[in-house]
Image (cartoon, rainbow, N blue to C red):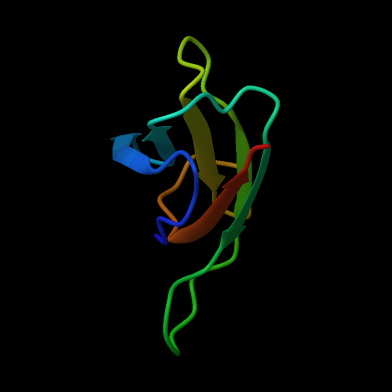
Length: 85
């Protein structure tokens, strides 16, 4: 994960299979978040879906959940970017 922003990443954590949070040093409210399944390098990740949103209960964080192609929560490698003004 690249840490180039006004609000730097402070913590990331896997909470359950397919559930992740990333906590930043600044408020992410009103930001734009983009996530995609993938891994660095030349290998690929199994197909699936990914969702990203502001972390409920913590405005300094974002929530990411990943799913397999059947819609079940499943761990997937991913890239995420968060943009704030």
